[in-house]
Every structure is written in C-alpha cells, then in structure tokens.
Length: 158
Image (cartoon, rainbow, N blue to C red; front, top):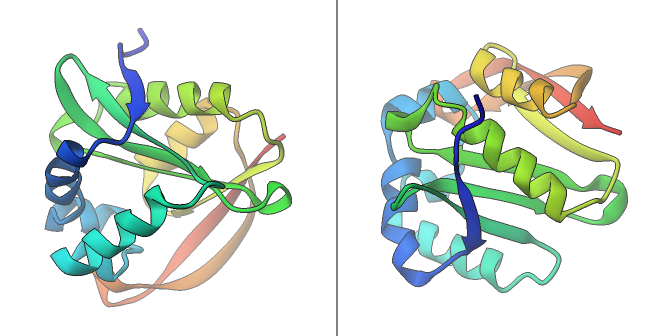
C-alpha cells in the first residue's frame, strides 16, 4: 500500500523540522554522505536559502498527515539532473520516501534522472529502485558521517 503524502512548496516554518531530520546522528550514519549543513545550523540556513533561491531546483516539503515528514528535490542541469530526499527517521519503513519520490518524478519529467546512495543503505536503494531507477555504476567516496570511505552506487532513471 502506498503511503498517503502530499508535496508542497517549502515554507519557512518547515525548516526547523528539516533541521531536526538532517541533524539526527543515526540518520546521518545510515545516509553516510553528509555535508556541513547537517552539523551546523548556520550552514543549514545558508544551504536552504541557496536551494530556495535556485530556480532550477524543484524542492518540496513532504507532508504525511499533518506532519512535515521530510523533503524531496530534483536539481541540476537537464542532462545531469539528480534527485535527493530526506525523511524523518521516525517515519522510515512506511513507504513515505517512495511515495514522495514518485510524486516528485511526476512533477519533473526530466529524463534521464540520477541519484547516488551509500551501497549499504538498502532502504534508500530500494526506494530508488521501486521508483524505476537502476544501478549503473559503483564508486568509492568519503562519507563524513562515517569518517571514512564507503562504497556508493549511482542510479539512473530512463
């Protein structure tokens, strides 16, 4: 059964929930590849100001019931467009990420679309595959949350 979610434009009031989701150490460990804005509130605010000011980025708040469940986005030029999402760890395993990514892909018909994930992040890889992405490559990269190199997979949709 597909989770019932809604996507809407990001509001200022969503940012505290996004911060809580992104700064969760357990979620960071699973995601592995993190940036400065996962650890520093000022960097987080600057990041979201840039994202929200970028006309090429399609960024949405994921709402489940009356709760801000996370965010989902597509960004980059048409031939290199990527997706990203982050869902509150307390809501994992309910189909919310799959429903959110499916809805985003309906809003942004750009193909091909790409994604990266830690190879051992089975949940995220599964979400991407359920949405039609296929693994097209593997690489190693530094994962700040794990303080070392990890295996990563690159995925592509159509």
